[in-house]
Image: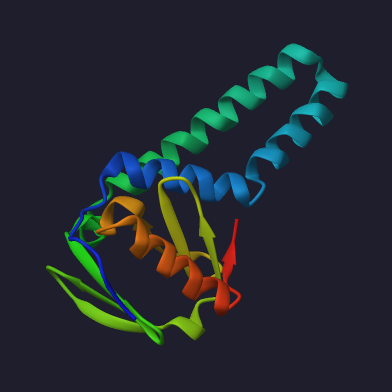
Length: 152
């Protein structure tokens, strides 16, 4: 089995929404809600709502600033992947490399993309649009399931 993806580039808005999704999954939002409830008990509902709005606004601004930082230029370069039973190889304008599939710690499949985690906070973004066919997506999912990596 060998799957070749089409070349794609990640946009700033895509990275922003993926990071929002990732941070949400790490319970930052739940922390803010719990803190707001605590503050609501001590300073009232208006204070809690105001705190929550300020906290979420600041969080969104921090994430957007990170997305737009100059250090992320390589994240937005065009890239493609080649996937076989043992490796995921990537090729981009600035670099190339191989990752053993067994070194992935978890994989999440969403409606428009896969997140392939190589560490708790480091992942590879692989959009569905990069695959050349639905059968390639199904073949990739089957590979991930046989390796017991795919989580929904």
